[in-house]
Length: 277
Image (cartoon, rainbow, N blue to C red; front, top):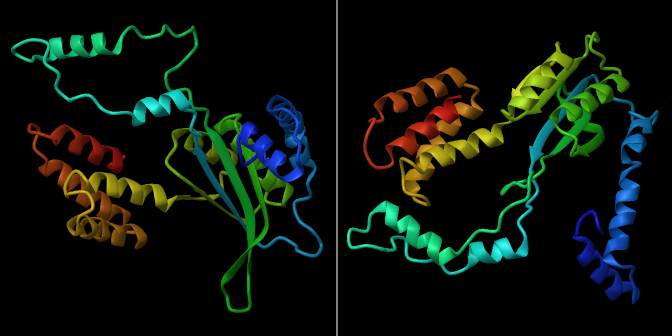
């Protein structure tokens, strides 16, 4: 339960079902104690079994995400009633005095300790490995012997675990078997994975690309409108059709047509440049 709920919620759940539960701090210590053995346990697991032998194609999917770390007080502040956007501290309502008015209304900020960050989310990397086997119909079927590994140790550690898992399955660096790696555009993954898999095929995960298309489209069409859906669908046809050069060319054309000055222009140009990159 503690792997899916907070320690406090796990304690409440145990009390409701078992009429008793250890303290939340005790549950935390047990989970951390078991977590210490997680990596050695994963290393000794067999890659496959005689009943389900691996296929001839290895697929590796890698993605990362920062779990939400906002406290209850921070969430309450975000969800609270908003002050008027433009508070006037003087007759002209200039930016300098608006800022002063906001700081006075907010009060003094609590000084952070050395090393504390306002946004200190720790990224968790998830690596999924499985194989595919070609059937009598000529198609690749699977997944076979699917393994999931997650770590807070960083992108380099995740890449090395993927390398070790692939070698254990018989897909070593010098093997002639097919390895297909699917990941997003994170620079850390792009930096660490290709040197460890020199013969692998790398594919950009399509989901982040489509998400960025929607984000860029909101700079051209109203959010939630049918026009926005049509705008995105036209580009999705190029994405799913594998027409990368045509897609980038159209985006560069939009970037070239975007004026250098005007309301919302800077954000539009920045979003387009990011997606092209």
